[in-house]
Amino acid sequence: MFCVIVNLNGNSNIPFDPANTDYAEFKKAVTAGAELQDASGNVMTAQAAKAFIGTLP
Amino acid sequence: MSTVRTNNILDASGGNTATINSMTPTADSLQGQRNRIINGAMMIDQRNAGAAITVNSTGTFFPVDRFFGSGQATDGVFTLQQSSTAPSGFVNSVIATVTTADASIGATQFYLFNQYIEGTNVADLAWGTASAKTVTLSFWVRSSLTGTFGGVISNSAQNRSYPFTYTISAANTYEYKTVTIAGDTSGTWLTTTGIGIRLHFDLGVGSTYRGTAGSWAGATYLGATGATNVIGTLNATWYITGVQLEVGSVATPFERIDYGRELQLCLRYYQNSFNVGNQPGVSTSLSDAIHLLSWGDGNCSGFPFQIPMRAAPTVTLRAQGSTTAGQVSSGGTDRSATATNIGAKQVSFIAVTSGTANTYTRFTWEAASEL
Image 1 (spheres, each protein chain N blue to C red):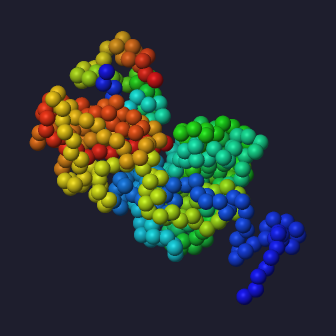
Image 2: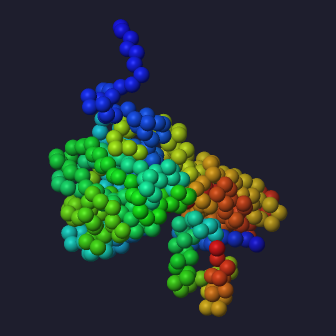
Image 3: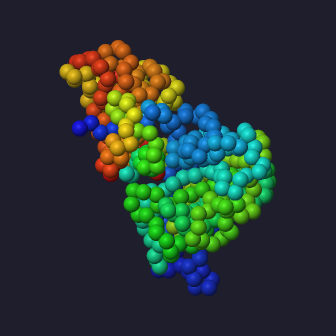
């Protein structure tokens, strides 16, 4: 499985590492309801986003 | 020449404050690697090649390695830049210049110059325990303004804070400042790879986040009550260098580290593929990039970092010769790409959208794992 987060503001790649400050900001934002896109660029449904967030370290 | 033989040297009162050439030798002041601040002489700047950066949000803006500014998205704006205006014995400093003044800072607004110290580098201070050690902060500072200025040392959770003040007596003149702080016996102080100590210099902080200088408080403070708001004066300048935080109640001379070792310390938090003097995101020099061979599926191999990083870093890729992030050059065409399965020691591979098989993949990279 390919694991990376693409920050669309700057096109940087964020690892799934809780010690990474960008990841911590990402998790905080998506937990608060920020929009998520899948690998194809499609906006995730609320249900899919919730399931994804549940898998985050 | 004569020889003095003795087993012990005490001061006139029989105590341990005897000085030699104005310095009191102690177990703390004689040890190596005294300074817990990295790049305290503002020597290493991997990001900007000496160019000024504008601090216009609450994000993190690094004018030199390890030190960053933070501000507001509205109201005041200041720039930060590595400078060659430095006191005797130093080559560099950082200058803050106010480009948009905020003469009426909101209660929760703040304008700061900071360094966060990794917990592993201050674990021996034993803060949060009865054995907490005293530390001394020292630095050279200069400003177009005079008066009382402030700063804060706080913990990761920002629920233990020690505001401090210092005085600048003469405008546009470097002055040496020392602040001795009794170690905090309360609170939680991380000794991990997280934030051990936050050091803030207050360039302007609202009333909510300012506290009385000289004592520990169970509160979030970013500045000291009564301190001068540098941000309040258009074109005001504030320089700093020679920042040192060390164990003990004595400020020893600045611990000089050669360029190579200082750079090594910085690489744990930020590194890139660019030549020294070339600015990431600006330079298009071909020699900034690395070339790796792509696989049959068009993706390409990853790469190891120059030294292991504090944590898995955020990685930014750009095609060779390009300033556009999120791409690599694959078979001579710039294509979308992502650094995939990033660890603290390497990027596992580069996923390239419609990458060309079995050819060169060329790109520059930046990796950041700041605190």
